Structure formats: C-alpha cells, structure tokens
Length: 137
Image (tube, rainbow, N blue to C red; front, side, top):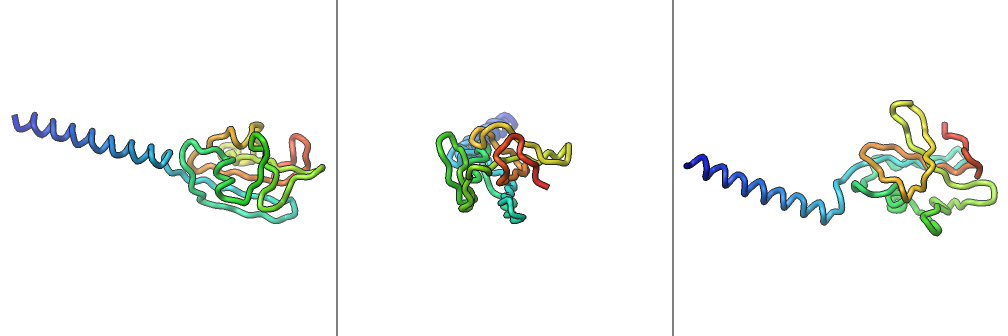
C-alpha cells in the first residue's frame, strides 16, 4: 500500500514539474540555443558574433536582426548590415558552415525561411550580385 501511495505521489510530482517545464518553454518561445554569425564586408573586414543566443524555431533573419544593425525590405530581403547597403554591383549573401565537408555552403533560400539549430555557424558576406557569389575564405 505504501508503494502505491509513493508511486501516486511521484506521478503527480512528475506531472506537476512537466507542466511547469512546458509552461516556461511556451513563455520563452523555445529552448535557448547558441549559434555563431560572421559578417564579411567585402573589404577584408569581418565581424564575428560568437555564441549568439537564439531560441529554437528562430530564423537566421530574426537572429541577425537581433544581433546586428539590419535594414530589410519586403520578404526579409536584407538591404544593409551595420550600415553597408546593397548597390548595383554588390549584395548580401549568406552561407552555412558544413561541418562534414569542412567548407561554406551557399543556402538558396531566404534567411527568413531558415530555422537555426544549436551550434551552427553562418556567414553573411557582401559580394558581387551574381549567383553563385564567391565563397568566403
């Protein structure tokens, strides 16, 4: 009988703490994760935002907007990062570090459509506005 009472109490406590955990996650909007974002300005100048805090489900666009000074147009098109704007010959592109291939991979979707994952590394670079742009080195 005592075992049944202990099992019942343990079940109620597990349910209570699970409810508290899911309530906190819902209030936060997701589980905290960390990513790195690099910005190459096309003139041998780079800025890194290492261990940038994000939440699961956030897009690269949103994390970049929260991290750097970003201006954008319709559909999340990035017009400028930290004051450097696109022009007739150059635009902002982004890629992701591929840990398996050990190189940068261009991603052919908008940053507002890409959900980041824990420990990913991204790179925004200002390059010649043709596809594919040159990869960062």
